[in-house]
Image: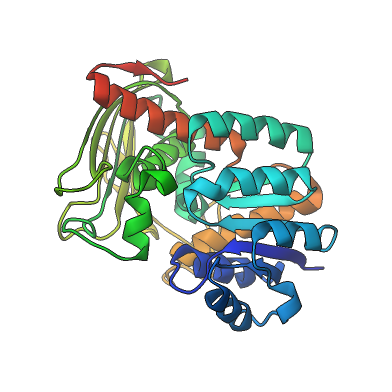
Length: 362
């Protein structure tokens, strides 16, 4: 199978998510990283290019230079820059004829997301968002089980994403841009990890949030953006939900957990134990499903008992996006509609918290 030629924007030395994308793109051998504009710092840009084994003439000083020089030479570009540049890069790339895979969120704000939706529709190209957790095999299994009625009609959704890395004052590359409204947007924790929880709840349950009531707070003195979030949710079909998202939960690591309750039982999945999915039936013994087992709809890369995790989930999105580009058939990779809903969730939660009332989503 011919590898797709990939260009990367961002992800230079010191970045967290860029190397993750680089590894994910290569894991299933579907892509060849062929060009990049990794950093505005010339030396870091050079180092990144050398680290990826690229020739010097395929490493560019800016994303604008790369798009101009690589037109017709790349099958897609991936965007792993801070949030404030997602829209201009994606817009320019799509209009230049590139497929685009972007780290979340889609844009800096909802207005940009709506404009980008128009660009995607007009371009005829594939656009994907790396909402990572939709790539886990057992997340997809949970989605399929709920859709087939395994727990009956969905009644309640509880999703939490709890981290502690910002429980004290922190200053480094990763913390500083997330705390800067000019780079991250109006939301802090709600935009960084809260939107992951929001997307996961809709992706798995099939229900859509219609209204919410949010309480977003700044706990660590001196911060300009929220670091602790509590949200009540009203989904379609009368489903109620709760979303808790925090980056000041001292001692917590990456505590993303989803519970979906139906008429006859519930489903429970946790990102820190991603290879186990628990089904709890009403007045029945609990059933534990293991990733990689032959009885599952969604297979893993390795047999049961051999853990798959974060990097593999990312790689699944890359693999599916490769299929989408090659065949033109939509996949489970989140797209621009997910991007619009994510930005709407962030801005609606901020508005609700400010006004201290319920707000309609979109």
